[in-house]
Length: 257
Image (cartoon, rainbow, N blue to C red; front, side, top):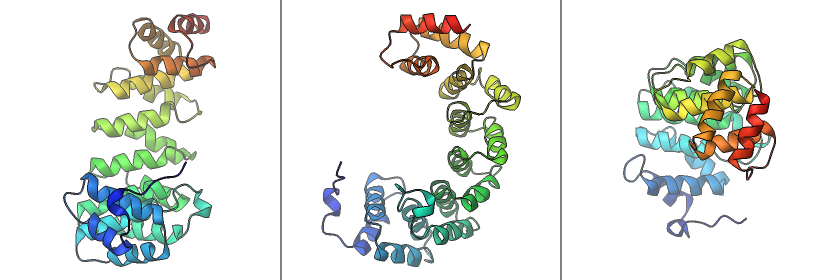
């Protein structure tokens, strides 16, 4: 499917688009639209401008440079991404920036760049005081299979920030196939989480591992018509079509118990 250029980016140069990324507040849609278009273009002039702006004395310009570099060639595996090593080195260096916005952008860049060096740098940030940085850590280590990554996710399931706990529980519970006492204990600890999303991820993660308590809670929620996510989780566990009626899913879960 062809991705269309946003109307406001048509005919603009890379320099003009970079200038657009500096407008408004950091989280506004318009500057992020320009960031997305710069990533999509992924041209030598975009990379050169990103490197130049990464050396700017203006924190927002340094942050936007990292935001662009984070997902250039994002549709390719790490080994095929252009300028990957240079982008990772720059993001790692920017973790020492004195501006918190730049540090957050650097952490998220490492999370998206995702090679071994990036993941190693992220793991060292698991106790960072900024929850947004810890969120980037949880996001970045989900797909890696090292013991350090698993231990990092286990630790982050106890984080004080809802988003961090939720993402770490998601990564540990349903995005990995490993099963161990450490993983199950971490998921059991989240069954009474005050944040519903994290609680649901823990239930689904335990049920996937055929954990009795996880299966029973999932069954109870399914029969109480709790949420669509329960039906999807049950269908995946049973290896049946997502359109399978809830009644049939309940029968299947009971057979596992």
